[in-house]
View (cartoon, one colour):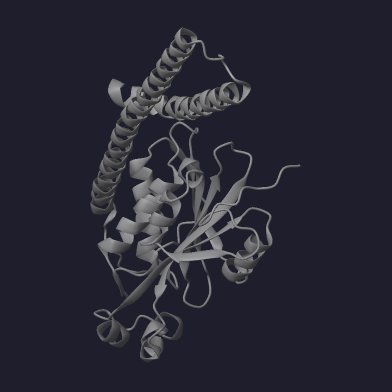
Length: 327
């Protein structure tokens, strides 16, 4: 049985991969295998105890469809500043009285939007399962994306997570919290990739102790930002491709000139040797001494070898050059 692929930022087997959502697109775009992976499904989960945290879990496949990985995406409070701990715990320690609402409704905290990834069936995924499922969260709803031709690429998911995070960079307790992040990404996927099937398991997402929590309605704005982000990425990729193709054309031209130069040198030397032989015959000298013939043969072999190297390199570059000319 073949081994699962190793793709940084996605398919990892020993230790889970974790990264802020803003950095994840660059990690994936640096790997050609990652750019071909597809999103098959997203499940919106909600914890039913404590802070009733909500998060998303995506099932993705490699380009062949043979291997799966899971991506967890969530918004939490950046706890690097310990002075925020009491304010961040308000959901787990208070009911939504008017006092708590007035105290915290305007609180703006640093948000920590992150992804965690692991290969299906791996030790890394077992670690994530403990981290995310130890308190038995409930699946609220599932979005199953359609066939491969209409499923989002994982790099497109990464762009969506990034622009969602950028849309509201701070954690606002009663506006842009984990409920908002999970719901916005989920609903934006519905709009951006309409070929899907949705299964509703419960209808309690976006609530705390069965009380609906205010959440900013941002899906349409995030979709617009996503289209701008993807357009900018594609424009940059096209520019890089054009630059690479132009460099290939320039290099091919240089190789052609080198090949012509080598052939001219060979022809000139052959002509010079032929003239020498004619002069030798005219003067009655012995023709074609063994040492001279060996030197001539070695020189011809070296020139022929150089020509072959240039030709092989030109053959590798020629398809790119033809593609650039066609475009």
